[in-house]
Image (cartoon, rainbow, N blue to C red; front, side, top):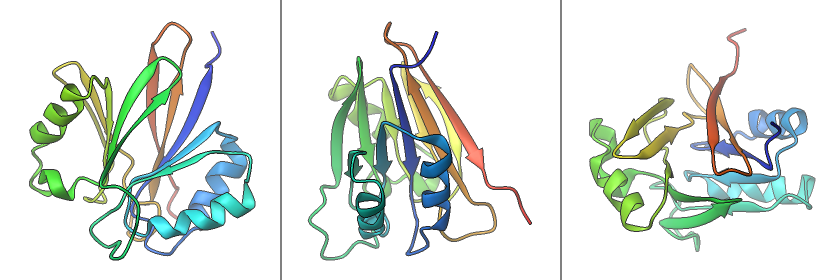
Length: 163
């Protein structure tokens, strides 16, 4: 079964956009999600790929941003909660507040960044995904989310090979 929607998920680009551009060129997503910390980096995506919708949220390094702290988007039949994570104290390794916020919004998928560490887990019926950092760090990564017509979805963390 082929997915009805493919999303590329990025976070913490911190002005380094090469991995985002490379990922979008090779993956050809239907939508791009950026989870903050230099959400302004997505302007280059909108210019380079004007036909792909881009959804962004504000991170703790996005001072002066007009992007919201949280956002709920619908990817086919799946509601998705987007945030950077800093306002949910995810840096302490506890994502329970984030899961609760996603559950309150009726979301089955919660996406966050902030920690620069890729992670995927299921808690309380919510798939929680951190794509890691696509910009600065030793281990760069991003994530693919593929949604199917029956409401099923898959999440995959894609690590950039160390050179």
